[in-house]
Amino acid sequence: MKHRKEPPGDKNIIGTKVVAVRTAKGMKQKEFLAKLQTFGLDISPTSLSRLEGQYRLVQDYEVVAVAKALDVSVAELLGEEAE
Picture 1 (tube, rainbow, N blue to C red):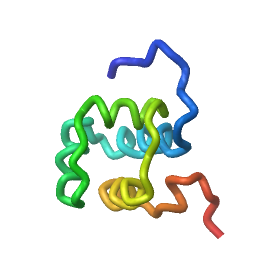
Picture 2 (cartoon, one colour):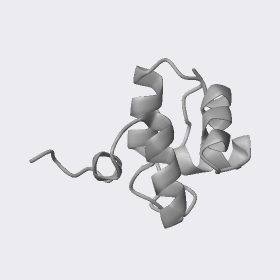
Picture 3 (cartoon, rainbow, N blue to C red):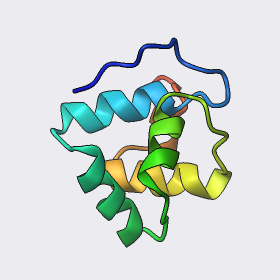
Picture 4 (cartoon, rainbow, N blue to C red):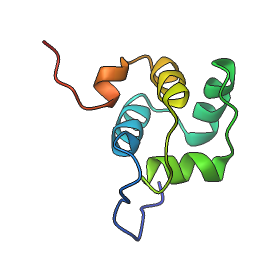
């Protein structure tokens, strides 16, 4: 996996969690993009990379699709602890 040369941005709070969950599931970005499409979210590889690097704003409907594609809750993506 290619490591980022720059520190994460500040445009969203889910990017690092998306990377962590996706890689823990052994899913490559290309596979993840295909899975996102099945949940109605069609974004480019560049857009996904910018989302994961926290250099791109994320719309509310995108957060829902990302959570479904990763099989996690929206709350988990947002960093909320389980009660």
